[in-house]
Image (cartoon, rainbow, N blue to C red):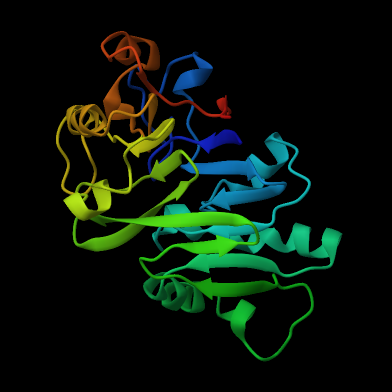
Length: 254
């Protein structure tokens, strides 16, 4: 399995427009963060989790030639806004793109992209096939996907477990029942917005505490804001098997 961090930033990205703080002014490429997304290459398939506003840039930057499916964690704009740009894959491969989401995200996509789902069949619009999942295991061809339900303040969001890899972002609560799905992982990529506590995201300390409880071999933190601090400084404070993720980071798992 190959995991590529397409983006590791929060909804505004880093740098933030108009901000001159030390993080936004940093020349370290690891402090430059597009909106959060991850690409997973497994079982001869390519999955992308979330298509934020930077989706086009991310696909071009990584020279992605094809994707087999998109999985949505939830419907906030920084996670769905780039879905229109799947058109390039429609045109190149003459196929609809398989999209997996829950009912609430499906309803939001209908409102956000009404032209995609209208009966007008306007030429050039993206072609998708929506697949609705609940909090039960499902499969994309030969690959088993285990949804992991969390809370983003009051909103239900989903992470995903594929083999021994787990991706869970935009959460500030995970129940014990859902945590039971997260043990014995080789890699967990987990939401950690900033140092201070937040109403709808884990703080760094909260994320570290959860990782210590779950005991994966390795953990990376994502959906990072400029309030987190400089990448190199924060990493020095973290336990040995934990670090801040960064854009274009690649992890290979057996």
